[in-house]
Image (cartoon, rainbow, N blue to C red; front, side, top):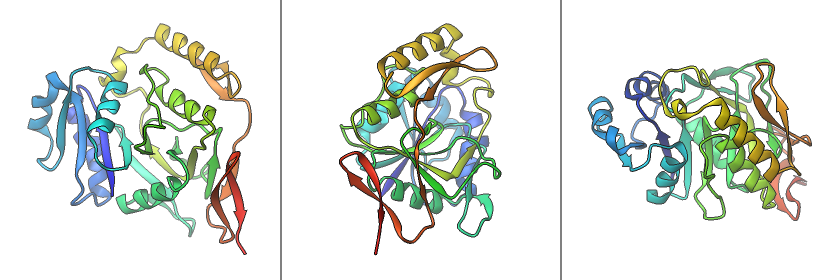
Amino acid sequence: MIRWVCCSAGRADLFMEKTWATLSRGGFGHRQLLLVVPQAERDAYLWKVPMTVKVVGCPVRSLVAQRKMARHITEEYKMIFIDDDIEAIRILDASGQFHHASCNEVETAFEMGLEHTNLCGVYPVANRGWMKRTVSINNAYIVGALYAIRNTPDLAEPNNDEMEDWARQLAEQAAGRPVCRLNYLAVQTKYWKNPGGLQTERTVAKRIAAVDAVAASFQELVRKVTRKNGLPDLRFLNRSTQLAQDHPSQRLVNSTSGVALAHMS
């Protein structure tokens, strides 16, 4: 069994309008969503969300703190984390069709990705022209909007909300454990544009400090760059390894270098 988790703050209405609508369209059905919110906002969420959603209050209003709490109280070994403003989850299927992904399709894809990794992500932008039926091993950004984990102590959670997705991924890679990104599965969302939420605590100064800290901690994997809008960001030093998702003679296997491409006879 795999547990779905959403961490939210101050956006009960947006959660219902976006993420809950997306999950319902995908046939969420009998599944139970764990919704972790600031303790002070728990009652407000309880009035808005369906009774099937388990709402848990966290003492600290922080994305990292809420995700840590979700992992601590969850019995399931595998977890899917989804943001509260996801308009759609789209999949490029084996026939070349690009459509809304069902929850079954999402779970099946993540189950495959977690077979030999602790962290599995999706393509960050739902764009049919850019997505491919491939899986990237390492050195491909795993966005925090939708990802899956094996809930093991080996997978460390960051201590800072800013750049937390980068820090989680890079810590795994630096430890010699592979991560993977499913390039045929993607989220549709307005990154940092929806009002409210946990990002209201973020500032440009905090981002600059976080980028500098992460770049310094993982300088063997990434370097600091500047976007066109002037904000700092990170870029991998090396390309990722690409696996063909639909090739019948290829599969993921563990190796001394993390992950290898095996050719099955």
